[in-house]
Length: 219
Image (cartoon, rainbow, N blue to C red; front, side, top):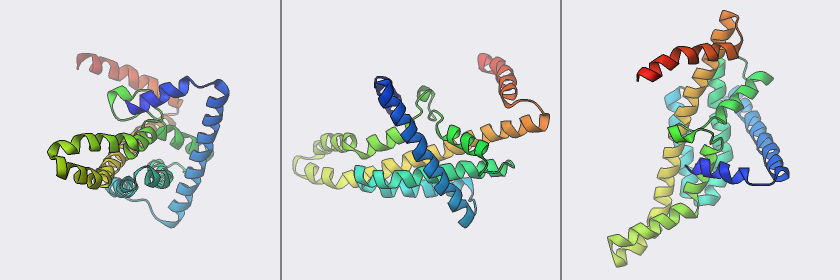
């Protein structure tokens, strides 16, 4: 929901501002992709479970520090998530450093979130992490905690912010890390099938959609 709202707000911006944000985001993602590529040369790819745990640990570290911590951690997490997507591409026999594969990795990262109502929320992950790390979460805790006790509540609220921020950051990173790895498996798996079958990738996706439609209708 947060990602969708953020995207709706961006749609209302002037075209000149929107285009500037788009190019800045693209440049930031390419820088993150470069960092991901360099890390793969130094450290081998890990298992999906290890990737999710590492992503969760990074989210917890960023969540403890609130919004300032998230702003430091998110670029590193973005590079890490792109690196896990690169790992899936390599698993299917593609060169992660090839320009076309780099483009596909960014497309996977820009995919909508893991929930049904996330369709179209290209900024879902980043928007959600920033909102959970900022004033919205702290305000929510401050409103709820005092109900546990007038004296104890204020102290609890102050102490709970970094703890719940860490939990929110870790949980979000864990869920999205698994989602992006699954999306990458689908994307690059279909691309490999298309190459092996000597048919265009778009045709392969279309054929799969046609086969899935009856099953979805029955379900």
